[in-house]
Length: 127
Image (cartoon, rainbow, N blue to C red; front, side, top):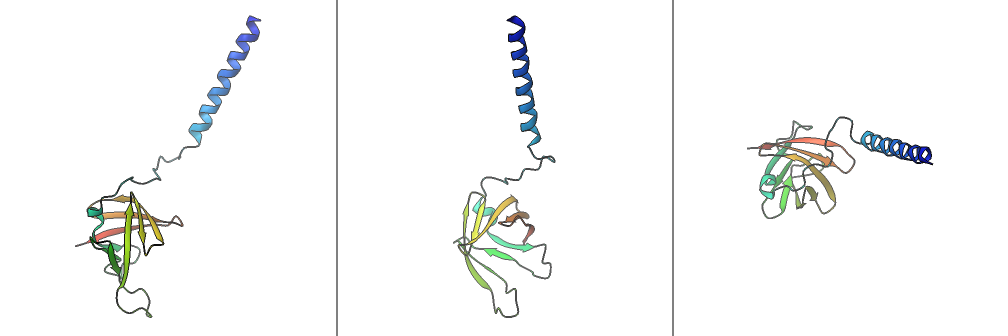
């Protein structure tokens, strides 16, 4: 009876250890934090930002304090700046009411955002 109980305890220990190794292996291999920051200050966002993926454009987004903003024309058919409204909920930035971005990193000079499709773009503040 003693041997059977000891065998059950050893089996339980092996199962728990295997489960813990399994959980550990499910974490990100490179340790990269994918969730981004939790709360972004509106004050950090306000101003003009240039998208480094499109260096020919001087400004990509301009955010005003009142929740409005604008972007330059992207296509030959567009004339003038395109206005938008924006909302910030934690680290989720919504433009035009439907375009959703997650702010991964932001400081006074740089911002990294992720689009809904997973594409990440770097932006720098325009002085």
